[in-house]
Length: 158
Figure 1 (cartoon, rainbow, N blue to C red):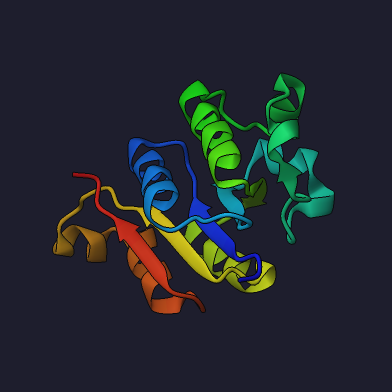
Figure 2: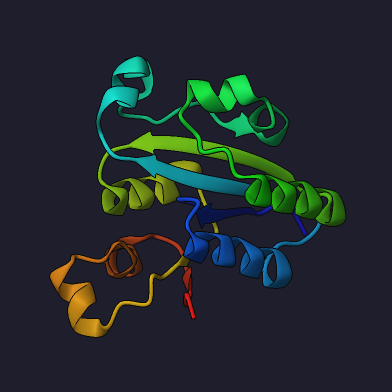
């Protein structure tokens, strides 16, 4: 089977960690490329990376993400739980892990990333909002489900 590119939307929340765990347990297989999509709202960090403000950062391999200076440069949260999980799944499933950072509206940037990176599937968490709340709050999940160009799996928070 060739390598597949599987995306996980990662904002380091409990629901995105649950989505990562679900992808590791149910979707990822040997030789895959796991692409973490991390979207930051426009602001101070974007100005530091004006070169990549529209196209996103370069792909950052897991080995580089382990370096505190790299995480600080890109304002990536320090989250031992996530990085331990990534280390484990990369070793157990013999796959590559990279992170792609974007700045802007998460709804639009996730959908852009799916096409730009050629993702075959995307996994994302859900905060567990009710249907009315999702509509009123313009849910990222609802938007991505309607607009992404690949299959999307939503992992419920509860």
